[in-house]
Amino acid sequence: MKKIISAFLILALAPALSLAAGPSVPLDKADIDLHDKDSLRNGARLFVNYCLSCHSAAYMRYNRMGQDLGLTDAQVKENLMFAAEKVGETMTIAMPANDAKAWFGTKVPDLTVVARARGADWLYSYLRGFYLDDSRPWGVNNTVFKDVGMPHVLWELEGLRKPIYETRKDHEGNDVKHIVGFEEVVPGKLSRAEYDQAVRDLVNFMVYMGEPAKLKRYTIGVWVLLYLALLFVVAYALKREYWKDIH
Image (cartoon, rainbow, N blue to C red; front, side):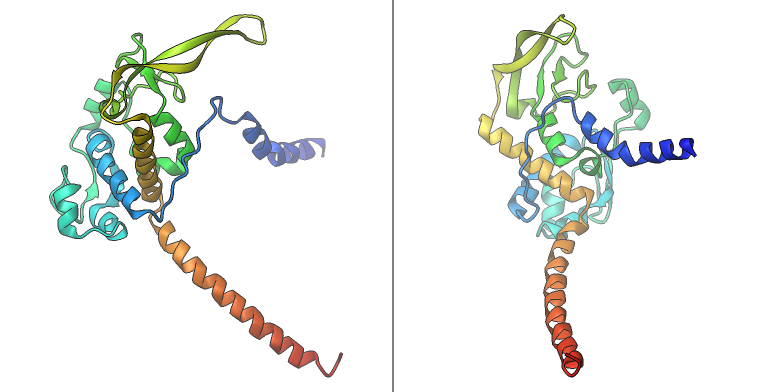
């Protein structure tokens, strides 16, 4: 009986324990808006130009993306299709998986549902967290994903930064270096604010891509709530009519 109670308590407390653990690095708010079609279209452009070379989105079709983002098939073909021939194809890549593992040291993940797995804030912080690190194979590291095996593909837009360290004592009294800021080494094509907005657009698109039906659910949800409100009025009036002689 005690074992059953202990098992029950562990299961009951598991969610709380996972939340207590939390991420080791504070995450910045992405503040995305799935209703912003301009943001989604710019995010799609950034995704196909900078991400789709190595990462696939094999569960997303070009024509579905075009319909949701307000683009014609011709616009999708002209502006967003660089690795496919037919607009009905999924967003796959030509790079073989074995070559990707040999070059990057690990299998390159598909990004269709990465926003659902990681969260918008994690992606936003990750794409803004690259810094120069000569000890890494690609010359960069990341504040959110330490020793990441991915190069900084957006470096032309953001530029290159080196970290500013501050030495602090840990709980055991040891000196530990913490990153407290960054110093620009190579300027990027975009200002800091412009780059943050570009990353926000890219994350916005990746969140959309993880669940395209969410946009339709939002629209349907409004009508469902209106229907339920109307049904409540009718049901309440009917209830009063049925019970008027009793009360």
